[in-house]
Length: 65
Figure 1 (tube, helix red, strand yellow):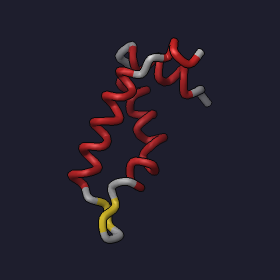
Figure 2 (cartoon, helix red, strand yellow; figure 1 turned 120 degrees about the vertical axis):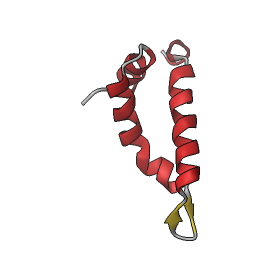
Figure 3 (tube, helix red, strand yellow; figure 1 turned 60 degrees about the horizontal axis):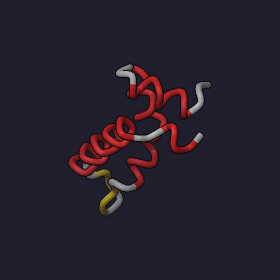
Figure 4 (cartoon, rainbow, N blue to C red; figure 1 turned 120 degrees about the horizontal axis):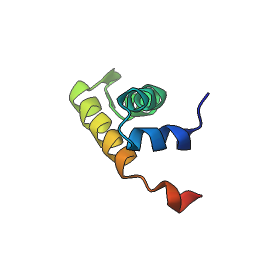
């Protein structure tokens, strides 16, 4: 299993497969915040997934070494 920092580094280098792995890994957390009245709000999920991808791309790995 790859460490999160390794996956972040690869995703920041443009590896779309790794980006997809990160989305799958954190999908339960994304789903948690997209529920409305017991069901997943798909529009909200899409927006949170986009925000997650952008956060991965901006994340400064050097800050946490």
